[in-house]
Length: 305
Image (cartoon, rainbow, N blue to C red):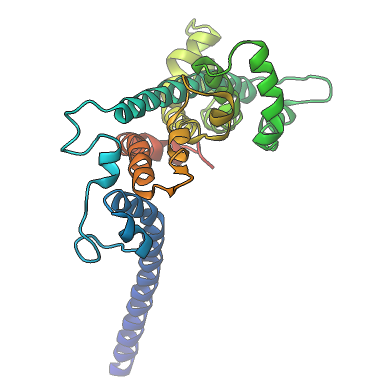
């Protein structure tokens, strides 16, 4: 009897040790991945407070490897000693920032609105265009992402020049909407497919139209997926550089173009680029934290796969 108890005790300790080791490995991997993911943001923040020698030497830890300075933020007119003074660089930064806000938010809202309608139709109705069925149409939308942007550069340049849409916000808004629309359609199609069609049937029996059921019943349920699609669209459009640099010159330039302009004949102004980069990603960080619960709900509901 005592041998059996001793054997069970050893087995229990072995199981606990195995479980502890498994958890330690998992948490170790997660901590390592978190460090890898967050290090670029840390490097960007710290570099904005470095002097040129500190950047070249690769100093990383503030107050240990170097003494922080406001060099990067002073170059933008955003340091404590310059924020109250007139600054042409700060005015230019605010103009580019507002351009990015208007273009990215507008394109994302339009893409989510149009993409939700298209995805709802693909998830609820059967279409036939020649040999194409619903699955073929969905793949056709996704296939638009296969072409690299450089292939579309010359056609869009010629088209926008003919339509007098070069260096305009509306031009970038329309282009960015087309860019992220396929992704939104795929995300929202999965979201609508996970919602039982019996809900709409009950609404139709109660006297609602198709649009009434879609707007009052389906959309509120699909809201987490729509928010997830909006955030993904916002990130993609906010960070887009190629078309913003190609199709704009002065009035409609966005923040990514301004960040890239910190390179010149004198080299790269790492401190200015770091300050600009952090100012550019800060709104996305705030939005991600504020809408985190919607993102989690959208992923749990199958909106992001």
